[in-house]
Image (cartoon, each protein chain N blue to C red):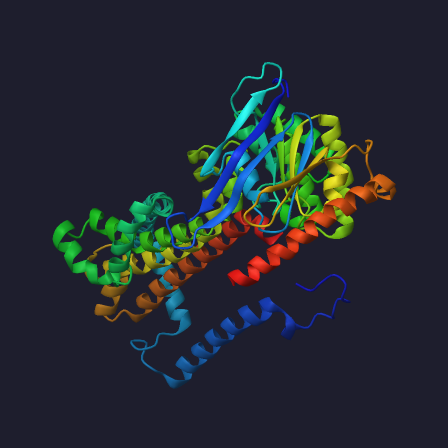
Length: 270
Length: 262
């Protein structure tokens, strides 16, 4: 986070799977958006709209078939190299043969950080997600919510310039989700990191994000971009604000149309 | 194991695992001893357990059996050890490279189902009956299960874990060493277990055919001269070897598989 502020720009990106086959799938079409440094941007849309795919493109694990990805230094406006990124996964993707501490320290270990420093930083990250005392447990011994907290600690310990959240709470029950949303929103606020959150929960998007990008059903395009100006820190109480209800209804209205469209596309495709 | 919540039942001998297991073995031996004594069957066909034990102790005392055991163990583990190292490496290579897999698939399909004892005549022609022959036969026994299980284990690795490691900055080599290999460990161990079993069978069989030293050779020669007690004594040593190997593997498996059981 010592590096200068860098925005991630998606420039008219398109992605076609199986372009050479008879039935190519257009996953993304002419998507342009910008992820501002120090802000949380949520990508929301019906399932199959390509929001996770867009995240993989931003991470560099997938190459778009059209358009491009740019990293722009805010101060100078010039293009720069890829900022440090770390991902929190829907399926947690913890290494089952490593303890909590070893999982969190994994990235630092790969980078050759000496053991003492590595362990100290990992312990600090574990404490930040309230998992003190669980350092030597294995992932199987933890509940789903605790596992995802390990996943968050494993990403944050890398001190990424950009934090990628791929439906981080999608696999958790509703109560655990609420608690973790609050916790994550606090962590992101205090760390000041840029975050891209893929979700299909409107509530999650409003509670965590500064800006919400609503995507259309396949082929995924940007439907609308909405700024969330609700005051921080946000919590469950935020959901009782009148402004929250207005935002929620507005996004739900857009999503409902798209979900209906997605259902029709799916039934035709089947 | 009884779960802690249940009241502990009163101990009765016929519910104890160890009493039942060991007890039945002892019972068979006692019945054998008595039946052999009463019927007066010739020890040439069926020696009494006491005679076998005497013969076993004799063979250990004069050192012959120790030397044989040493030779057999050396032959098994030299080839097997080589197979573990080469087999795991080869397995990872096959699993991670499409081209290598395409090539290896054919050879494995041809050679794996072939009973390895059928290779003994050819190997004797090429290598004679000495150390290189024994090393090769033991190696051939172990390598196939190890390679096949390593390939399976690596291929079954959760792609999400590979992605997570890449995300955390892992190089291709680090992904192999830090993700694919550890996630394949249970499967590799299953292969090692199978491989060692085949190695033991092949080395003892090879010793029976060509050897002058080793448990297999001792077994065969004792049979030739109708020293039936000695035949049984060697069988007991082989059975004990089997138990030690199996239990050791169980122990290592448990240690390595801590995260799987938890």
